[in-house]
Length: 393
Image (spheres, rainbow, N blue to C red):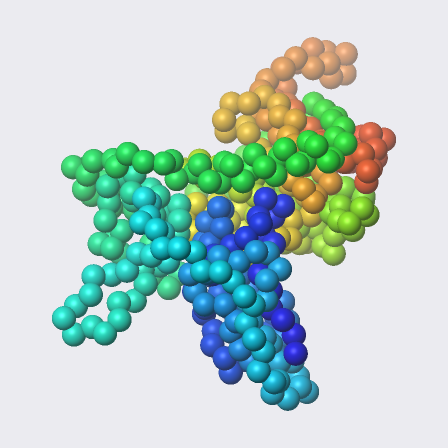
């Protein structure tokens, strides 16, 4: 009998609230299936199962907040017979309290005269907080997310359609996430011996190739230079395995694949960095599609647990915010982070001639326990070399 436990969705997560079971006892599941929805400071996350089998018993009821590692269900794998009854883990129920902001598991549709039980309204915490701030009744919003879930975009569209709504004063929706991020970053600076490297990369060839490639594409299918940056980082990581992995229990664990986390700012405040799996194996078109999809789901609610627990390295791109350079803090337990600023024009000497060229500032924050400046320097040089040959990406 195998236990399905509350997964860790990042170093800043200590517990999560089980919002909804999507499977029931007797259901046969396979690795990667979505079996539950869990709420954390990062939002409502779809939880995948990591082993195939048949669900024997659900141990935790929806609405209960449990620590990371708590058994949530029992799974019978192939060849096993029914197990003896197992006592569910002792989890104290929180005392009921009047919520100040709508909660994912607490919002229900109005009951009708003939209804015996009102179904829960599926809405991400970010969307619920935004609805409260804008004075939008989430129960009246038509959801366009998975399973009819109300997304942040749905709430904002409803607010536009109802301009008379007045914002409701209260605690900012992103405050809990900001606290979680601060806790994780404080731990990172306390425990990780950071080193920092920077490099100026000529983007002339990359941008010229991008303009030419996009000329024959319809607008929705055009590539952004962020896809080139992501692919260059992923390809360079293939030759820098000591930067691609995690530091756990006092030792470095190489990543099983190159799963690059992409930092995404949320409209309600805060930051999240879900992974694009096997980024080195994806084409530029696939990466561009994955980036668009990831940003949409991160801001609307609908990320998967593996996207938050699997990143083997993170990229943050603050070019759109007008930042020229960024030296980020490593997301534990990862051991490296790459930062990019905006593209600017700078004088450069090419063939003994001073010319204006588009350049970008690239940086590396590394963990000295897993690598050193020499290895980090080779890694940044590899990124630069790949961006000088964009047709090969």
